[in-house]
Amino acid sequence: MTAPVSRTWEHAVVTGGAGFVGSHLCTALLAAGTAVTCVDDFSTGRAENVAPLLDRPGFQLIRANVAEGIEVDRPPDLVLHFASPASPADYLRLPLHTLETGSLGTRNALRLAHRSGARFVLASTSEVYGDPQQNPQDERYWGHVNPVGPRSVYDEAKRFGEALTTAHAEAEGTDTAIVRLFNTYGPRMRGHDGRAVPTFIRQALDGEPLTVTGDGQQTRSLCYVDDTVTGILAAAAHGMRGPVNIGNPGELTMLELARLIIGLTGADSDGSAIRFIDRPTDDPAVRCPDITLARDKLGWEPRVDAVTGLRRTIDWFRATVEH
Image 1 (cartoon, rainbow, N blue to C red):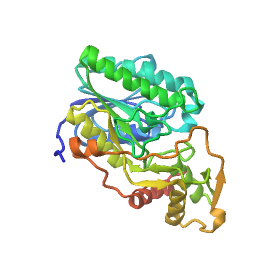
Image 2 (spheres, rainbow, N blue to C red):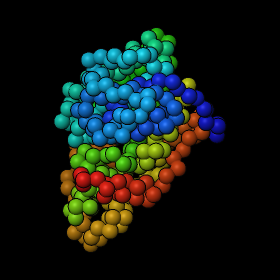
Image 3 (spheres, rainbow, N blue to C red):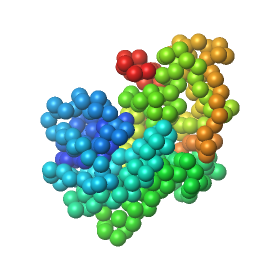
Image 4 (tube, rainbow, N blue to C red):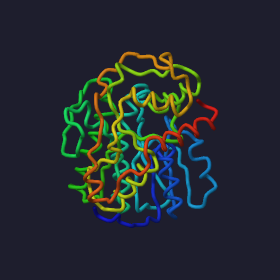
């Protein structure tokens, strides 16, 4: 395993910086002494995610749609492109916005990085693998994606973003990296965003049955947000192009996850605590990252186990008004 590369940044632009992962990135960068410009249109990001940062020296918030352009006060040396609806509830509600953010928004973020001589990191996703026929998924796998299904607006936006990022590096010499993020969870998720962890926690805390889709045997691999952020910044510092998987190779079925959250929240543990509903179209049957490349090249692997991370997330949900 290669030792992690240490690199500091003077000024980072984080698109989607008021979103779940983006706001944690802003916080981590500020803590490391980096000035941060957060760009967000608040279509899915939330002001409260960055409210504690507004009075911090070096932090600036710009409300803008990245698909329409990105203008900042001074050149960055790091551009982290994290703008995009990411939950099924959001990208199904905002299909054209999702596609425009993944195409025009990525182009604009790449242009900003290129003219500034900055390092560029694209937030891609495990969804580029679609409903995979290979498990676990490594970066050489091309995926199994329905290009016209309901999930395609997100899947294909990210696949196009990867292609555009690769072409920019080849044609323009832009210093780029692609990180493929697997299922990430933690504080600041929205209880109604449609993803399994916040949905199950909200339902458990509200005394509702946990809605497990299908028979609950489909799997996901859950990476706590602090680990994800560490992996992203390790890829930025390393200089590798990627793509590189950032995720936790510990695989859970959705039924196992529901039962775990029931136990951790102290919710009713009899059979009525789980309700089975129809599975969404093109819902992946498996999802598990091969993180050999991240371990070998970045010296990175997740540290927070599922029980610890879920407890922290449950505690955060309990402390917030929205369940």
